[in-house]
Amino acid sequence: MPHAIRPRRSVLYMPGSNARALEKAKGLPADALILDLEDAVAPGAKDEARTQVCAAVRDGGYGAREIIIRVNGLDTPWGLDDVRAAASAEPDAILVPKVDTAHGVQQYEALMNDHGAAPEVGLWAMMETPLAMLNAQNIAASSTEPGSRLTAWVMGTNDLAKELGCAQPPGREPLITSLGLCVLAARAYGLVLIDGVFNDIQDGQGFADMCVQGRAFGFDGKTLIHPSQIETCNEIFSPSADEVSWAQAVIAAFDHPDNQGKGALKVDGQMVERLHADIARRTVAVAEAIADIAAAIG
Image 1 (spheres, rainbow, N blue to C red):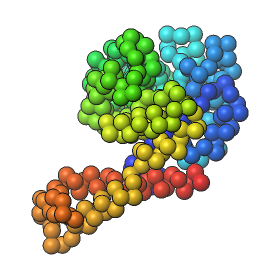
Image 2 (image 1 turned 90 degrees about the vertical axis):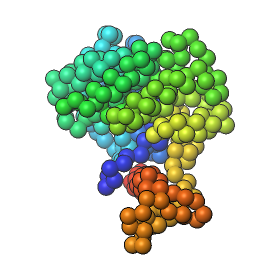
Image 3 (image 1 turned 45 degrees about the vertical axis):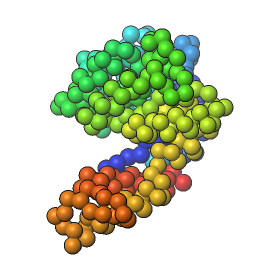
């Protein structure tokens, strides 16, 4: 894509054992697809799902959608074979579960290297354990090491809530500390950050409310469990027409020759500073990148 910013508003999990779902995904307006070998696949179907997913990635047909393969953990009978096969299939990224430490990330990176993953294949990590929350800064900092593939985190809020022994009520108060720690660490080290899933696909308002909360927190997008959630998610995680119009006005004001060198200006009755111009440029860039991916997906 021509923009450095790549939209990840809607990141849809697709069960790797369901060939029909993998084919259907080629026509869905999600920004990214996680072809899942882990939670969505029963133990007896793991090997078949691995073969099926890797073949689907090699065959292509997903257009501009970002394709991620979620593997099983290295502490399972399938993890090593998953990483080996996924590295060979060359998706956009490999998503690894239950990373607790920076060393855990580096283990997966070493395996990807050993099994011939192309340099552009990234590593995404599930942040879903209490220990990962406590180690969030160190895990994020590992992305700055030479040769690191770590580019994104995905919140595993269901697993995290299970390990914390907490509920997930509207507003997610029991998870606020964990979400905040991950936002801080991801932003400090330039990682993409994707919010966790919303479990009740019948509760459209509850889902919309959680998307609004996630965007307000600073997440780049949200993981989804059903195609019916894509449209709402894309809308909420996109800059509105009013936001884009305001951003363009701020940019134009600071770019005007009469305002060169000024640190603060009044735009439509509001005082804005140079930092607001930076935010405005990002808003416009995000909107342009979204328009590009929408045109590419069709």
